Length: 127
Image (cartoon, rainbow, N blue to C red; front, top):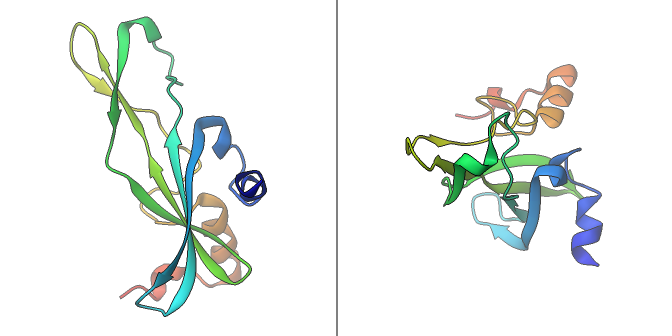
């Protein structure tokens, strides 16, 4: 039930590519506020136009922590683990492009766009 409810708050399309593996309610020592961490693992399927029979899953890349819209006044962080695949013959590694995460910004594209339109771009406050 808890994970089903959380799915309603996640960025659109994210569950097409990721599974929720954990949900944590934590205290942030720097702000002395409670936060939510939603842990997501990429599903084991290659989304690129490659022959999936030529590649094998080789675990995950290091996790990325991305801030999303708050829920009930609590900060929400998505901890995302992307898969990596290795070509069986050439040993070249590939991973999927995640277009719904804004490049160079630790926010989902949706919240980044919202904040830009309100004039509250959070990068101004990060020092």
